Image (cartoon, rainbow, N blue to C red):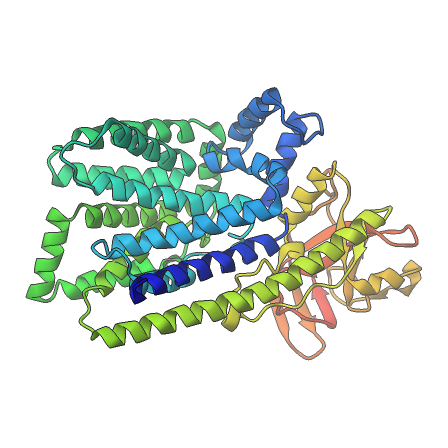
Length: 520
């Protein structure tokens, strides 16, 4: 086996193993509970296979959530697939996504370890892995969608004189799945098809027209869900858009756009861009999808890294394609690729180590919840992972998320679930609470902050409160203004009902000299 092929294969194996470990160590959480709960609801509390329950589940998800194929698969995926099998499939899919990114950026090379290492590093930095992508439902929404999207671009831009019937059917299926998998894929794909049709003056091949029709069908399926329009309306009503935040979510898109402007300042650069825009179908589709993804992010006003995923993905491939034209000696390229691979190995090793810590913490939390007659786990938070060595890949804030309590409580039959500081385990009488000065009317016990039952607005049906804003004044003189805080009801070992209040930010640390009023 020649050296490039050996290096290429070894890198693929390392990536797959690292991702498999990361997925395997990520416990069931957040949206996994939601979609598994939907199926159990449709199956009368059972997790066994039932065709009628599956049909009801599909209808329920389309009505309550959205029409994405990803979410239709989420419930059965979480319930029926063994953890090891699911982790292996997820790892292979992730590796396939990065391999496709490298192939699109360097289409002429059969085995290109340099391009693969560059694609791994680029994907590892610019894509929003930090936003719970390791959770099964989040993974299903973004990574397989990315694989379908990149396969769609590869297939649509391929020129064949007489493609066979089987190849055409496969291409149509890829187009259908791409649009159906996620509505952002549908928007980006439609923009890509439109850009190619315009530059070719509607002179598309028969296979391209068939793929366009299949893509349109998938778009109709995903957008005919009533819930998706409610979600769009909800995000549009939010007043969270800022240009600074917008650009921060699109680093790769910004770099590509700035690079294109700089390249256009030279004659050679203008020739490259003109040739790419007029003759390179892959470039046209990636650029159109990038612009559409960025425009959709601004339109729906969803300021999160996941919402930027389908702008950053084509931007990352475009950036890699541009870097391929940078004149570097072969030795320098190999050194850079080796450094990129080593950096990603170190990053994944650190992330895996911390994810194992959080998996053990989650296991301990559930053991205490199940052992408690009140559903209360007295357990301190696990330490925060260092950003520099993990890029916040691990799912380290699970039990600080309101959504985790809502989803887990619903999955467990609307049982009250609370994870509160370990010190509250020894609270035997409410007389031991110490009032904290300030208009919030809160109390301290050890390192915990609590409110008496009924001291905050009425809870939802499972005793989970929305985020509220509090201003914390620490005893060391630090002040944290308008901190989103979560409050939820729990029952002490003595049988008293209290409300645990915790800051939504890890940097907010007590003890507190004063906590001022919140507003809902």
